[in-house]
Image 1 (cartoon, one colour):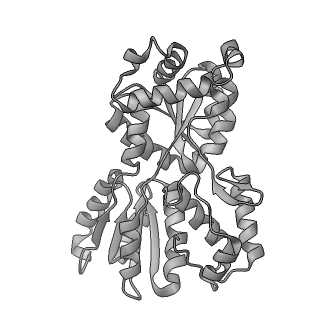
Image 2 (cartoon, one colour):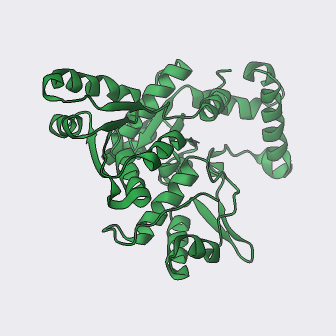
Length: 328
């Protein structure tokens, strides 16, 4: 079972600490789709929280659309990816009730065997045409308040897929889709429910990408000496917010955590001058950190140790998108 750590003396409510840690475990695929979450009794024994508090967290996760409760069975991580309600409609689906499952499973099997979309066109024309139309336009969406996460997703996907992508704030997605109905919307699992709600009525599919699980960095965090000042830098406010909550849940007041976005020169300078170790959550932020260190070298007794995280998007998500967009 994933280890959850609750700091009882924190200003952050215990329910928020647990909620953020469970959602992170789901978004990073430590809890994959279909996984049965621990019972409230198990979590109560593990975290020391009251079972009512854990039930409240599970209800919040269910309302957010990331888990579902099956009566008499438990709480399970929802399968999230291509929005089923966005699938094209055809009278043939009603005439042959099993045809949709046959087409989808058959196409996936052909793709796994190396068949291209063009080779499969004659066998699965309706499904293939829909996927090719969607692949002509790819939109990356996240809430405006965390547009940095969208920049990371778009930057890494453009490099991996070799196609142009358009970054659209979630608040503007409905207007953009109203102008051109075909396309594929890509987002983090954190925002999949909101994106599906907007895109599904317009027959636009939504694909969720998995984020890096940060296991290496969490291991480093546990080994830091008491009293260490740890800096965290990223384009994304969401990454920094989650990292700060998780860091405090793991270490409490044992370490001092400072965060900065790369466009905040004042905070970035403070992090460089105070932190013994700096975790840079994305390579796009690394040049700015190095520049501040170089400019401050005369003022620093010892330059901070830099830990640069791996790619924000996992290889499995990249490969999934390549298949779905016909880029294999």
